[in-house]
Length: 316
Image 1 (cartoon, rainbow, N blue to C red):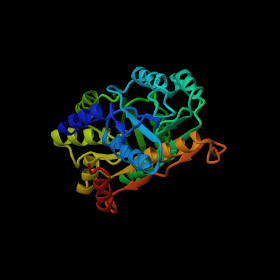
Image 2 (cartoon, rainbow, N blue to C red; image 1 turned 180 degrees about the horizontal axis):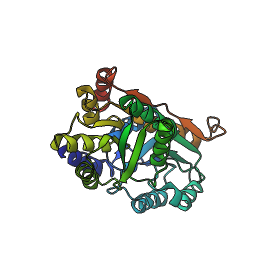
Image 3 (cartoon, rainbow, N blue to C red; image 1 turned 90 degrees about the vertical axis):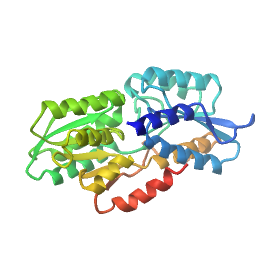
Image 4 (tube, one colour; image 1 turned 135 degrees about the horizontal axis):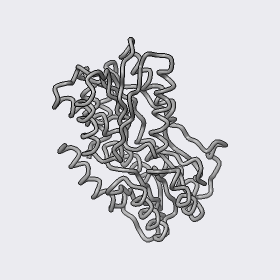
């Protein structure tokens, strides 16, 4: 829990700081994420790298204090009022944010990353094919449960396209198997609620074969709650993303594996390509307006090497 508190404090500081020294002549790009986690710390490294390669640009990395559509709306309105040159955003509730996103897209180039808003006028989505990532998780689930079993899914909010698509991918992968999804528990990206969801599940159900965390913080919370309950290794776990606790669980053999994205690339490519577009080069925009960054599965066979990579990315 100390790790989560420290991450929140770091997020509060990062939310008000621009990346790199801005000058009056700089064009500012707003990079608006959907919550606080090490996932976005890695993306921050990518935006840092992009700024170091650009001339005349600065970035404001904005982290909502609470993961809410209302707070994201205020951030976007503030950025527009300040005259930013472009906006990248991972929308909390894309279906209900269409009007806001279209307003922003009418004033500046707008990209989405991590969570898409295909009904909006965004120019480009940079991120994961979340259905395909869900299928990868589903294959991990089937491998860990060859005879089937009941599983529970945990995620921040099903209002986000990435969450719904991951669930859809898992359902696609397990179709025809004996794996049964009991429910999908949401927590509104509230860590305390996420912990209660896991604790309540462990108390209420005594026949679950697996818990599955769909957001970066869900699997570490599952790990901690199961450890406290003495159930690590007794109920299988599959996760998403590369939180250090998740990777430790994979290394210890109590987490079957995790599907990881490339948040560094989300940050780097969003800033670089927005600057390119602002400068008048639109040639990189594909017909489908999608730039998919591949995911990969981390399990016992490759976790040690991956942990080394993550330590480098998370260095201050």
